[in-house]
Length: 431
Image (cartoon, rainbow, N blue to C red; front, top):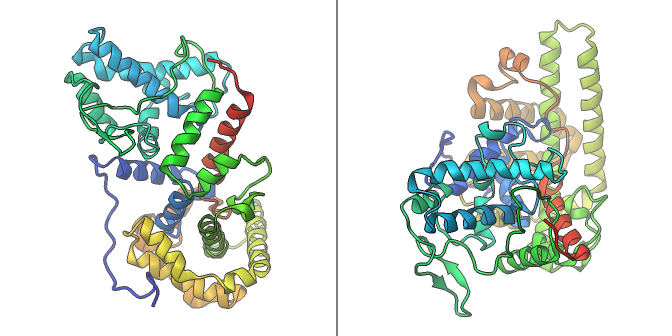
């Protein structure tokens, strides 16, 4: 019996904020962002599986990331702050305020460099921004081995404020590389130097040196992943809207191809559950409106009908791949990455996959699956569930989840790989 199919039932835990776990904080921020994005709204609660697959393909990346050069902006800002603290230019009481001021100054610098607000973290909120770039990129910086400090950004700033130098002891690998250190060296040696006056005017363009360094860090820290392979090969990705559509996929190592195949199969099959959710939601919205003609709902109905037809066609085209999909291997991959996938999530996904593989149209029409979708949302959201609460439907803006999962590809991974490729090809140095 494969992992994840037969398991004992457990109660689901409520959403909590573990302030001392940077990874948990990142997941909460991503979840909150997902609730703001109509295309990725997780109404059926498959986000833990989606994110585990994304972490397998693109480790170190987050849906909150924008451009690759933030992997240098953050070290540059804080190496500079460390220098100023040691030199006595910034007192302990001012460390937090100065750190925030410099991150806001980075927003100004990017705009001065001609960068549009798109991609500049905090550009709209500016000094009032609640989530700073350091909080968003901290986990990725550590995952790629650029950040050596073991702890959240808050602890790092507290260490600086308490005068703990970055010149202490470190842990090194057999080849002499710095691999760990909490109150010792905070950053990996060899980070390309910050351009002069980068806090006055800068861009998102990587220099050749920066691109080569980031590529090295990704390859060394995440070997055998789709991210590392594509970053090295740098194929043309302009018209690639899903990771399994990359033109070099057939040339990649077997493990990478297998992980990408699992991602494609899961995306294809689970898309139908979102289709069913939208059909059920539309039906209830028509009932709320009295069942008569409604222009807005008619437009939404056309979109949902197109979504349904697209999924059925997609399942038909992928029938051979879906029929031969090794779901046991898929769950092994997912649960190796995240062993804390909730049991109800496993049960719901397995039930849907069984029904969809047998008959896609039948799965959409199945009373059992319709009931499962309604129950699934209600168990996750309680009084905020749209399928069971008219007020929740009235306060929400449709449509929901109209696109198949792409596992951070369009939002983050494609851009980061493109940034590296462009920097490697352009060469030279710039601010």
